[in-house]
Image 1 (cartoon, rainbow, N blue to C red):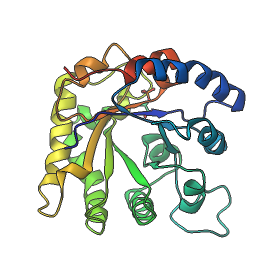
Image 2 (spheres, helix red, strand yellow):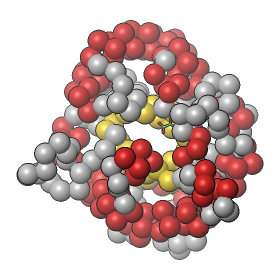
Image 3 (cartoon, protein in one colour):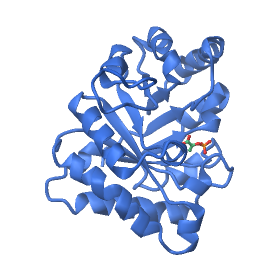
Image 4 (cartoon, rainbow, N blue to C red):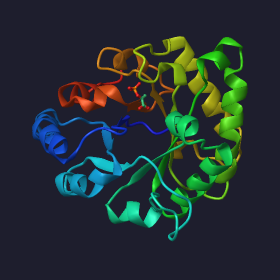
Length: 253
Ligand code: PEP
């Protein structure tokens, strides 16, 4: 697994242009002052991708989209293509977030198609997996993860030298203030990693597994003490620049 930590800010459907300006008026001076050694990625709503490019170009901070469509162009009202994402200078794209699986009925085959598109267009995918509360309570966590990971690994097989970020996000921990225990995170991350490393053709250096689910500056040190965790996907806490900069400055103990 790669060594440097990765912190991803998922802004979801929050922030307009004025908020973006105010945010980086606070975040950027703090970033320059504290010089984090970790990698940082912002995923704003797609309406702000061009504006974030103007603000972040020339810094060490990367950005990306929260969604992608798997067709190149045409009559797909409301969708955003790989070309459009690349046009905004984006490096990353989020795929299969549980909110997209739940509210927009994104299935594993759709997610695999999106992953295929991201890989073929050289956009680094951040693919989300994770079980619901009911699935965990009924002992199905690993079978759910296996079913979600299988099509992802199958797609990776066509792109063996490409980088991928897998976000383990237990659905019950997203936006709830209840994050998974260190033991649960360790167990799930180790399981996900083992599924990838079982494949003889996989180069572990291309895989990062990040944790998401009610991450804040208080719980990151413990989460990141696990060497199977390569970073964090942060929702709510990434909307506050003073809080997110603290998270980004977490050093693995
Ligand atoms: C997320 O957006 O994927 C997420 C984990 O949100 P939060 O940090 O608010 O739980």
